[in-house]
Image (cartoon, rainbow, N blue to C red):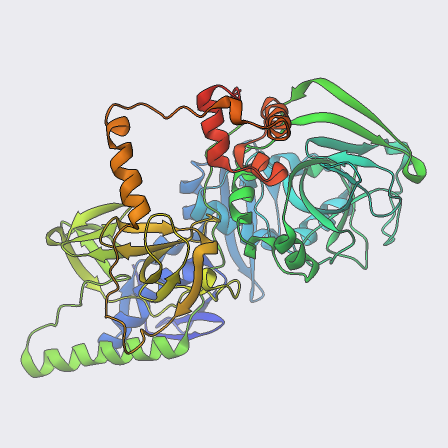
Length: 556
């Protein structure tokens, strides 16, 4: 345990002060900061000026990383001449000094359990050119996308749409045809190992580079295939090869063109999560690029699987920023507790609300409450009876991340009212938001309604956000299923009970749709996911899944 005598919280993070006269700074971009805020500030406010004891080992990044990766990677943190430094070591013996540029990826390894960084270090050790190795590390500071679980970099590639649907060409010559599943590469002898901005080679980029084509795709690059980072364009990378694994939509194109992350665009987080886990199309063809756009294409007889398919983990956004005003209010409330104890001799019990810290059955580490519904609360991924919970701290003064967008579904927060229009399950009207998710789902918002309890609403059906209910609206909006939905539910009840599926009349499939299904089958055979087929062919994933069930498509 460590004694802490004081703390300062600001938009930049938290500074802790110790009785020894030393101090420690935790930046606001660290996932540790929010938890540390709960563990230190409020107890200090209640301690009446006396030092408190805090187990800072719980926030020791080195220990968290080692535990999260099962010992596959170790972190050493130290301070030299007042500057914090980190070194990384993998179980296989690869070591990297001065790893501060990988701070964001180290945090992901610690708090998301990602194996990508350890795998990256193993492959990075194969980069034998010292200058290139240092350039890659500096480039990593610019990368906003997670490392893939196999250690590859996930980066952006701008191309132009070709005349043939599903194909793209390079922006420079307009000649090199490529598509999702292409592995594009150049012979080493045709490369320029130059740091000039426009050297000969294949180029990919991070979000800060800007736009140079009318389409944006995601590619995977092996660390050992990196050639150089131009001196005056630190967000651009020259590589020996890249593998095209997905195409993003116009919203993502606009975001990256404006030097923002594509993760802010609807649906992108889900696509990236699948790529990171290796659930993406393999190599279906190899495109060898020569001089002045000359190239040859070799279609592989068998799809080359380039990554092991792992578990898909949600992509987290930025850590919650600290709101100094909220912190000030929380400290004031904590002082009220102290005053109440001094006056009455009893300690007020904090209210059980979303965000409160609780212990289950009075044991274990405190965990946050995600949601409260009557006599149950959602804690640790499950609904638990409130009788088993002991509130140990009120909600953290840390606030929600800034909204990534301006659409009503992007701005909605629990407790808000949203106007839903066009749902087949509930009538049009205002509904209270129960909870929201930030994992790239097409139904980000769940609303409260008596017929279903809570219901996920497609983003496009949320037409308006009402922060405060109108005067003529009830405090809690209620609604019943639409007449059409009620009728359909009654008609479907016998079929659902017997476990049978309705058979779609295959004869009604038009020749045009049959052609799409054939393309979908080709992509399935190549290893594409339903989400990727949905993006490429504009086909509903639910419809694709149903066609597989009916035998119109064969899953591989």
